[in-house]
Length: 495
Image (cartoon, one colour):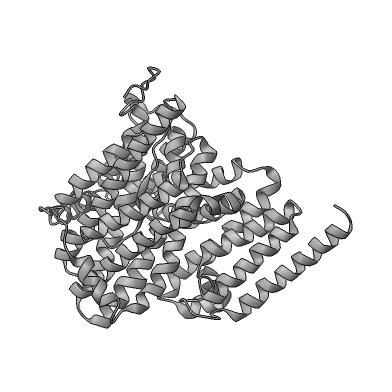
């Protein structure tokens, strides 16, 4: 597409291939987790493969196509061809909350998989509507929250759920995983060309998959399992969301106490990732992105999807790769086709996780690096502090359900710190930035807001309730008093 000045913003370029595989693999990983978990909960394949995955694919397609168009608009406006489209897909932490905080309790309380699915679809639709509404104040929040706090919080997610988790998966097949990791380091970090000028991600997948079958880490049973998922799953709208709304507001109102905080989290995740892209050189409107994410979530729900979508943390990785809009367009199109014919589950069954995991390790470390590179060195302590709550959130999410005693024996603070970890990370980071800048009144304000969030149960509590975490309310208010004292002292000294 040519701009008025004659600058041509390409539909697709070589660098888009690497970014496509990184984004596609991230979504594949989420879709496979969704399928395995829901089937394990007792949801029939007809709902999982016939409704939930197609609904999610529609949302992913709609969002990716919109953000490709948005990138072209930005390229025309700023007269440059190096604009990268925003990555878009299912938020991994939000996905786990909807799996275990919405779908599972709905299934347990109703005893009916179809009813539980409809309730989750309605919860997803409401989540999208809330995020679209939050977009009205998105820019104001972005302006008042320090970049170090926001990027530090996202870096915490990147360190635990993406880079850390995927490094574990990488080393489950150590010979293959380490070789593929070396290819990623050479090609994507060292920026060295691969043989035959193949994109690094594609070369890594081909080499890793061939090695897996040659040395016996993968067997032929994978192929027969893969073909069992093939079929035709049309992308059709339905009224499950409407039927679910009635069920949600009569017998399952408690589910909404999960939906509100996780939607706030999703809106902040979008805001943080848009902020990260601005730091990397592409400035998008955070309010528009939150509205689009909310609309994409609602569109997915109309087609049976039950998982909110968001601007991806992987966007900065795509920017580092030099991608444009082509990877986003291709991702949306391929995802729709792959879901309709059951190819996603088939591909995931053929390709070992250890082969794709190193690419996501790169995505995670690029986000961590960006959090530091785009902030002044004096804010590094704030970035580091903001990363820590997600360590607790990771331990809680992965182990508390099956090993509560072990987690509590390590520390009774792990679970309460992990609840609302995004909010805690941002507030701690914001307070630290304010103190570094000697803005003690601002630090006190953030501490008071943190106390309010704790009182409502948005953090440090398992659900929304009044006076949900009294000890944390008192603790944050004590911090506010301490900051206020130094602000008073600062004013008296005339600084």
